[in-house]
Length: 168
Ligand SMILES: CC(C)(COP(=O)(O)OP(=O)(O)OC[C@H]1O[C@@H](n2cnc3c(N)ncnc32)[C@H](O)[C@@H]1OP(=O)(O)O)[C@@H](O)C(=O)NCCC(=O)NCCS
Image (cartoon, rainbow, N blue to C red):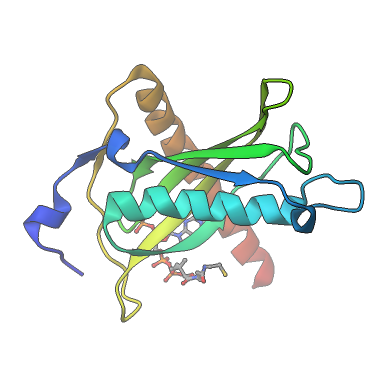
């Protein structure tokens, strides 16, 4: 579906940059006080959606979340910081990167917990897919992520084809 020209103006990555913070509470944790992986996945989805909404100025749905590693645990009382931005836009889909850190304000540490790549598709209220405006990487880091996102899309496409072939 075509959108009006103003909404299709390319936007810099910085316009989509978002940050979300959560304090780990007992209800987010297992009996040993460690943050549940599923709760973190939910927060990653929310943080990713913020960047996707900001960039596309539209409703989005999560089409895929790539492989996730949890490098460092977070515990009850820790502050979890999630930073997200759009890495690259394709047509109706875009890749968003989310980087998660855990801050312990008592001992003043900040550690990397996880990095995730999510694909969002822009849709309207009738569930029709919408074209998304291009994203402009401005820094070396953003340009590297842009290039890497192209390679990851190809890997995802091949993997999707492989799984579909198995179902036939
Ligand atoms: C994601 C969804 C919109 C894709 O719709 P579709 O008609 O199967 O997809 P299409 O083949 O037309 O592809 C549309 C775009 O999505 C991308 N896409 C579709 N499936 C994908 C996947 N598994 N991984 C990455 N990208 C995917 C395509 O590459 C295409 O991108 P492009 O337009 O930028 O080239 C649809 O499957 C859906 O609505 N799924 C449920 C989403 C949802 O409810 N999410 C919340 C979690 S339950």
